[in-house]
Length: 317
Image (cartoon, rainbow, N blue to C red; front, top):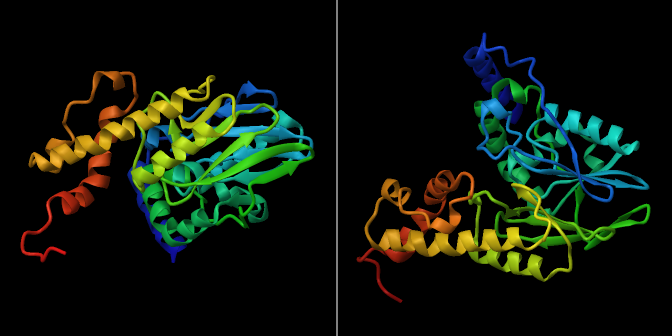
């Protein structure tokens, strides 16, 4: 069923983009060394858009004695195939593990480029992919058109049920968390101490909240901060060499966001007006701050209205 929907949308996208000359475009994947045997592929600090091919998430490549390990695999099979080639050239070894940190398609739609047997995710992520993967795929085809050509939905073949995995002597701590989504994986490389935070952590970019539970997110950020680690490779934004600046920045934004939107509800603002509230000066350096505020209004406002403005005809308990 998903394939037929994607095929229909691919035809529509091809009609829409005819003559634009994008079919031959390729992703630029430029790994930058950030720790011993670890490279970061930086995503664009932009929304998912046709011009960037959806390549907005940060990716980690880890060299181990047993083979290359990837943390996330990008938005499409075209991206993931090139990422695989780059990683194998860089490390001189085949890709033997792909971790998918959470459900969002900028991080995991490239699974189809790999044998599912080497792709691992938390059980909650696998459940969410089975439930919601078709909708995410449809949306990506609508936005990205030919960039998505050939990208089928694939589900990780390995459910992560352990807190540690080792590859030829290089160990990774696996942290099962949630808050940005129903299931969020973070990793710590035991050789260097580098933490890979997935989308639990944004750096110099406003966090996104499409599936957020802000209370659980705060608890996960506290856990990340308490874990022994060195630098931080966030899901979006530049590397944080200190390791806690990005955690604190993410926490500060969501700690401001919830009461700010609650105040907007109680002031009687509609959703358009709430999206235009003032953003504190301390967030002036965050990319996409207004954009993500307005998205968060669409994500969070209905539930806040239901809680803060209950129907007066309902009996009180």
